Structure formats: C-alpha cells, structure tokens
Length: 557
Image (cartoon, rainbow, N blue to C red; front, top):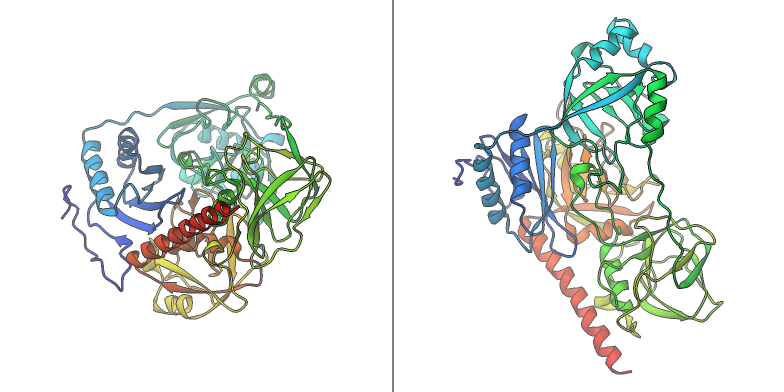
C-alpha cells in the first residue's frame, strides 16, 4: 500500500504490462510509455479525479515542480504527468505524486473568472438557428441561456488555447456536424455535444457556431499566452455589432515577422514534398494545448547534429518523402542523416547544389549545418527561401562516414516490428482485438502525417459503445477511432485525444515511426517495461558508439 493509502488492485506481472497500475481510490496511475533521455519522456495519467480535486492536485504539482517533470496536463477527470525517467523512477514519481495528493487535501481552489464578450447570431453565428431548432427554443432564448451560465474550463487542448467549457445547459447540447467545416474563423463560439468553446485560431471544425468573440484567446508573445487555463470559470456576455467592432480594433494578433539571416548560406531551389525546420521536442506548455512538436526521427536529428558539431537539439531541416534541392550561396558544409545512403557531411562551393529529391531507406532525412539553422521551429520551407546559421559554429564538422552503429534502424522492405506497452484503455478491447493487433500486419496509409501514422488492416473492435472525455495523450500512443483502424500519434499530435488508447509504442521505436512511409507494412510486439527500457538504453549506446567513431575518425585527419 502506498503512503497515501491507495491499494493496487491490479498486480504488475509479465503478462499484464507493468505500465498499468490501477488504484481502488481516487487515483489510477497508468504509465502509457517509457523513454530515456534527450527530450523523450514517460507519462503517468492520474484518473478518477473529479472537479476541484483535479484542479487542486494539478496546482500542487505545479508548485512543487521537480526537475524531471516536463509537463503537467490536466483534462476533465485526469491529469497527465510527463516525466524524464533519467530523473525519476516510476516508484519515485508515484511517491512524489502521493505526497502532493496529500497536500491537495489541505489546499483551496483558486480560479479566475474570465468574461468573454460575444456577438451572437447573424454572420457571427451561422448555426444559432440550428441549435435553437434542436433545443425547441427561440434563438434569443438560446443566447440568454448560453450567457446565463458560469462555465468551468475542463481541459485545454485540440489547438493552443482551446478551452473545453463544462456546464452547458442540457437543452443546449447539440451534436457536432457530421461533415466538419473546412474553415472556422478565429474567435468563433461553438457548441459540440455537452461542451461549448471558443476557437482561438482558424481551423477546420465540426462544432455548431452560435457567435464570435473579438478577444484574442491565444498569442505566443504574451506573458500568459492562453486566456484560459484549466479550472478557470468563464462567463459569456452578449454584445452588439458596434461593440464587437470597437473591441476588435484593440484586440488583434501581432503578426510575427522573421528577419532574414545575418549570414545567408543556402537558397531553396526546390522545397520537396514537405521540408520544415525542426529541433528536439519542447516541453512545458502542453497544459495550454501546445504540442511539444520536434523532429519525427529524433535519433537521426541528433546524429546529423553530432556530425555537424552541434548540440543534439540544434535546428535542422526535416525533409519528408521527397527532399529539397539546396544551393550554396557561399561555401558551406551540410551534415546528412536519416533516409540517406550514409550519414555523413558534404561540402558545397558557392553555386553548387545538393539534390535530395530521392530519399532512401525511410521517409525522412535530416540536414544540419554547423551552428544550427536560424528560423522558427516548424516553419515550412518554400522556393527561394534563404537560410543561414543561428550561431557561429564552435566545432568543426566531421569527416566521418557512418555505417553500423551510426545508421539508425530503418523500415524493412517486408515487415517492420514496432514494440508496444498496453495503454490506459487496454481493458476496453477483448482477446480478439489483441490477437489481431499482435498477430496481423498493418499497412501505412497515405493520409499519414506528422500528427499521426494511420494504419490500415484488421479492425480493432471496442467492447460496447465508448463515450469518453478527451484525455492527455503522448507521442507513440495508439488510438483506435470508431472505424477500428489504429493511429500511432506523431510529433505534431494534439495534447488531448478522445479515442481509446489501446497501447503505446515504446520510445526506442519513436524514430522508426518517423521513418515509416505510405505502403510500408508493420506488425506489433508487446514488451514489458524492463524490455522497453533495455531497448531504449541500447539505442543510446548505439548513438554513443557513433560519437566515439566520429571522434576517432576525425583524429586521423
């Protein structure tokens, strides 16, 4: 029994992944993946926390932050703790959580009341009449009832600053559109099932739009980027078109302008299929709905930076499926890794070009330069873009050409095996679903992206109808939507997910997810936590061996 009196009712065993530990009081702890270092993390989900209990525990955890805690993400009745296992063992982490759970019993809730002005109806709320008809009310009565409630922010996710507001009167609950709009405007106020929310940015969406606010809900440059936080109370206030126009004039996003590089080195001749600037994942803001992002294949990114003489997380180009053509403006050395024949450096003279349109052995290649690229992380490159280094290089690039330990594991022409741990909703799937997942093969679908790798194969049926609130998710989580076709979440995943998570691909295989191309075939193998950690450590040893090889080869020149 733990120090806080939570008695495990599901024992850890080799058959049942030790990632699942269920408690019979207040808290369920479920580590849905493991990982090792350099931006990879584990996750523990605390479930069955209701209302103020979740708000309290989340606040206490934030105030007692540990250096190994990377993100704390509350959502409805769950709070996820993303952590670095090099700083915490799972036993130490659960003890820390238990200690803070005790503190939360003696803490009061401190939430803010946020007022949001809304212009309802007309062109601002094209679905107001639809909601009124569904509720059997007039449009004016829908507005009155919607604005009469003090809502609570149950979660922030879907997109940065998107707050799911709980407390919508039952008569206003309206199903989402079966076919989502391709574009929902910034500030749109919508109703989706039992929730109401404000869209912080323009995006596709299936909610019923009843109004619009002129407030900026999320802005990167602000001290507090998100207007809403988990646990806040929210009240809507109806305004007229004149007041909307007045408020909109003083509430607007400040456009970000990226300055040109001080020392131009490369020009993009052909941008390829998708070439972006990426580094290692950036943690600390998932509670605001901001995904950590970063490279899909972090091992190849680190290897490219190792060859370039950079820190592991320096910004590099991530090229997907068909790489770019780059032209040197002045002499420059480029380090290549990932979906290239060999990981190595190449030097271009002014006017020479590097053509990476044919990638081999995977879906993504990484291009680094000494000092790292300048520019916004995630930026998509276009034709005639000019790139330069962020800082003056402190180390010379390597002359090594790497094979063996220096080459990351690649998808095979036949079947690639991915290792997984059981996920928090594993009990929702019967033996037949698990037989299919672990014995059949799946093909990577063309719709795959940085958000997730979509798989086509035997359906994974869920036991009965499942309606679950969105919960925190992590990279590698295997979600199962209603069609039964699994999705392995990638680097640009959302911070919350509403589909059951049957399993989580271990972090040793995350880079492999990033190298899967449409048409590749995969199968899954279940491992326990000890094996997952062993595989992660092996991956780190391989990279360390590559570093030694680079050092030895460079000393010969």
